[in-house]
Amino acid sequence: MKNTFLIIFFILSINLWAQEATINIPRITIDRFSENIMRYFLNKNDQIIYETISIYENKNYTNILDSIDNNILFFYYGIKNDDLNRYNRFKEIIINRNTQRLMNIFFTIDNTNISLFLEQQEPTPELNDIYWTLYFSSGNLQYINYLLNIVAKYYNETVNINNYLSARSAIWSLSSNANIYNQIRDYIINNNIINNEIKNYILNTNHNRMQSDTIEFIQQQREKGIW
Image (cartoon, rainbow, N blue to C red; front, side):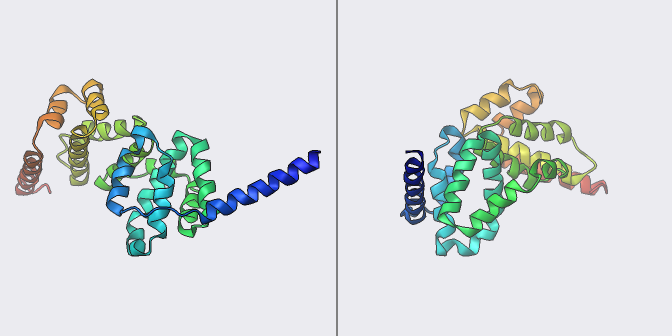
């Protein structure tokens, strides 16, 4: 009886693998996929793994995969930290589907100390984007804290232009996302990392004004011979 059960289970496993490998995954546009990535944390819909496969198996998008690989890597790394069981389920779907490029991404996640890598990075606007990706894949506020700390530390930066631009990038992105997501707006209001003056600037300043403020300050610094 025990052996019979194992045989039946093995056959069912093969059938499930075959179904996963041959399932017809609907096409999705890269724009819609990007929107769903940015809203994933709101409902954590498992459909995201099939949408990812759709993008990576769409020959029309082959030429842009180099530009999105890193985003996908950090997105699923965020999912791994948030819910290991879900991540492993997604990885199994990818393996069964045999989508090689995505398999390589999951292999990299599992065999790289990404946390250490992030800790070793100097502030940059690109690093800010990574932390947003991690937030969108998990909803974990520690990633918003990173951005707020960059703002708090470099809001008045006058020496290192890269740190200044990182802070300005974080300010702009916090403002933009606070206008979209109430969760982010509320967290900015209630946190103790930045003061009320900076909170008010982030939440109530027009983006064109933010841009002109940034340009004006850089010009002033260059006139002083600093930058």
